[in-house]
Length: 236
Length: 236
Image 1: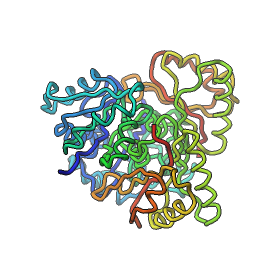
Image 2: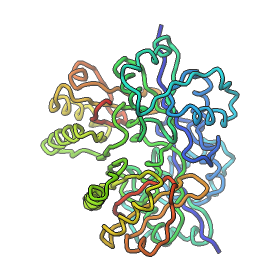
Image 3: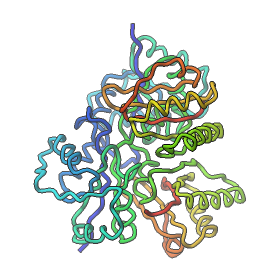
């Protein structure tokens, strides 16, 4: 018997998104998949239900795959795949395995000869990068910055410097610390450093703006608790 | 009069893709946009036409935005935006501004207060990363490796070393040099280094595999002239 495939299924970026955000190809895969790895069961159910694609949610099996998941849990959870059934990985937002723990399942798949199939969809990181105007030929995503003041300021200076090398530098923050991060950047960076802020990407209050630090210092930007991606970079 | 918006419009990754690859939201934007920046007019026309969305191609205006484009050309081309009409940027494959010259238009938009709106869609870089099983919390994309033998081998060693730091290292090659790159990697890297190769992503011959260099040395992989993304990284 041939084995199933592990599909990487993108979801929404914002609670404002609806089915028009999703490729029909993704919906089609969902219609044929009964077993899932999900970061959050409630979000995954709500997402599949919102597609209005005739899928009976109660027939689906959701296995939680989050920060606490480990290698030893994977073997039993992969049983449907070994039995020839497809499975899907669904993240909390955007594509799975990007700034989320989904790659545990993917790495297990590679090591047990299960085929991995990524589906078209976007991530806030990709959206922020393309909308920044910065170099998309070379870039680094750093995830979250350090929480403590000193290492954090140091990291900001390091990323500012790295961005001068031509590599766009992307990073993020827990949304309720966004305003503090902006404050730290504006205090730390050179006036001519270009900073891009992409907030509530694809949501109804989407705000994407790239300008020098000196101009940000005169801009009243309020994104407290709003998901955002930050980047330093250069214009062509 | 209010200004138009600059939409960043994703296209296919493979010539095997069809309209089911594209979010309905993207098609909707295309139905309301008459002016475009495109990397290749023929590809853009073929893409829009393939969506079968009732768009009359002959009514559309395509402005070439490629490696040779420069800043001075932007002002006149932005006239529709200043006149309140939307414009779109379309790449040769995937999302614009990622490993392509579209960011020239985006940076011009930011500097002239034109709103930039990224649309959902994917890139081969994002697909390769999420399907690798590697860390998606921290990663760097390096674009093309150097062509000459010595700097190239040196770069391979550098990326291999960087991948040990926890940052996934992604790179690519002109497709007709893929086999040479693989040969160089297998000759240069440590046997236990994990290499992921994602070839013909979303195409009918898609092949995505992550395994140690020692196992690649025993694998007959033929991807001459097939677009591919390579990465070094670590499993969780």
